[in-house]
Image (cartoon, rainbow, N blue to C red; front, side, top):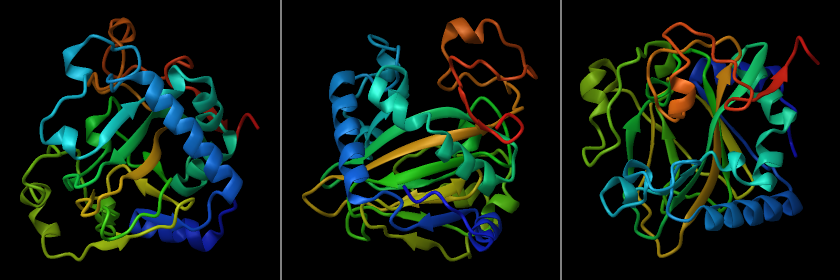
Length: 270
């Protein structure tokens, strides 16, 4: 696993809000990740979020959003092999170094599979959906297949993390709605991020990004994980937190529950 970061890469990430790392996984590691993700998705069935079996909100449907991608969240919580991948301290250190923070917790993982002829992923910001607000929130996005312009690669608008607020839009049919909320961004150019299988990207939780439609008869698989900087506090949003945990929280509380959001790297505890 290619986990070494140069100062130039860190500086590029902080300036642009994203970075692509080629050949993140070697061939053997890529096959292992593919196997683990495939098995974890199969064992989850139609439920998107761990622990929400039978809850209609979290069941796969047939609406527009469900045809953007197959989504399975927090696979690390109910699959031991996925837990081993996601709790790797090397991933946490990369995220911490890029974000410029001392410690990193998992917010949630996500398998995102854009099926054949799948809808585009509308422009959006990540962090405003979550139960904490942070200018240093960060996600990894690992390509399990070659990701191309034709099958729905990511696009980023560089630097938008520097002027973003926590205003957001839903991922819907009007894929440019984000630019109505942030009109100053509407004249900026987006950068595409095609990747070979085994490569990855990191992006800031406040950088504008989306993905194209899958215009091919094959699927495009990715495994992602969103990270929360250590010391983040509850903002009142439920997002993926279970009700039993929400019942213990009030706004401003420290989000430091190791069962829900494991601390996978800390420079002060190394």
